[in-house]
Image (cartoon, rainbow, N blue to C red):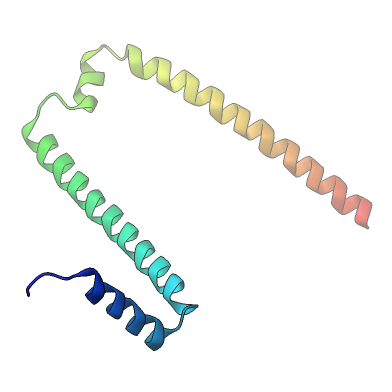
Length: 108
């Protein structure tokens, strides 16, 4: 008597369709799924923040301290690649600005 039989589920489904309509049920299910996905991502983020704050306070071999003990070789290589990326992005921005100026001049 305590378990749900397939007939119970079918009756429950029929009542839900009668109450809410066939068009609203998929939208409600989608909304519920999105809400659960957001909730899951937020709780995962909170757990990661707790782990990071707890491990950084108790662990002296964090990635930041490892970079400092390497003699700065990994950070120097990383900074040059970052500088290259910044330079490439700046060139792209300059090109887009030139294109935008040309379209404004042509429109005038």
